[in-house]
Image: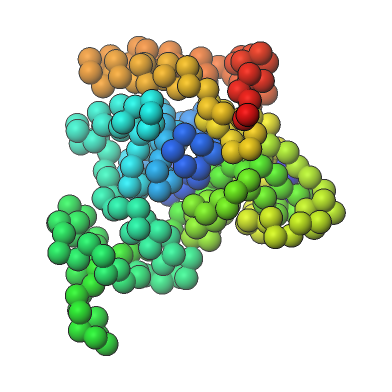
Amino acid sequence: MVTDEPSALAGLQDGMTVAIGGFANSGHPMSLVREVIRRRPKDLTIVGAATSGLEVDMLIAAGCVKKVISPYVGGETIVGIGPAFRRCVENGEIDVWEIDEAMYYCALNAAAQRLPFLPWRALVGTSFPEVNPDLVLFDDPVAGEPLLAVPAVSPDIALLHAGAADPYGNIQHVGSGFGDRAIARASDHVIVSVEKVISNEELRRAPEKTSIPLVDAVVRAPFGAHPFSSVGWYLEDVPLLKEYVAAAEVWRAHDDRSAVDAFLDTYIHQPEDHMDYLQRIGARRIFGLNEF
């Protein structure tokens, strides 16, 4: 079903577990994330990507998040650790479910298989079970070796971004979309924003390109990953990401929310919808983000 951001997120409620796809500074469903923030939900558990970007940090800065499940939250070349994430973790204002990237996928795979946990051999003997008591050491009943039980992570809603989809919810990523596919399999409800909607006939010309079939909702959102990149379409808007980091860093370092609140107001709360947001960014700036 092709719909818009408000309709796709009509079922969002306080306390839900929401997964957000993409990787590092690329492929995050920002038209959907901005709509989440506009709704001002509380106490969300955010399942970030294996390498989360500043989309998670913005949700934290907006006061939507109670818990984060992700191996990393930052901006790579822009900032090592998300400033809002760092501030709120250091102050005990949000919980962090500590895992590494391999256990992250193990937890998603457990949910996809409708299992309470999956066993994991790596990192036995490390301090991970101490910092995350949900990771349970047990003896393998077959071989007797020690293993870690990694609990399933089961998002209520997955928010993803891809290149194209047909009206029936068949998604085509540019590239493998590996992390997004793992999130989709683990989640109860999958919403995907896409750069364009294509016909089913066009999609069936290359069925091997279908990365995720039959999602629950498709949102047509050209430049929907902005200010992040969309692989094969455009690059990230580094100046805007740096503007956010500078604003959030003032909050982290000086406990002054004025700059980050102004950023959220300017780019999220004031625009009525995604097209209004793009108009605010400006055509010259948007179309200057060429992929090549």
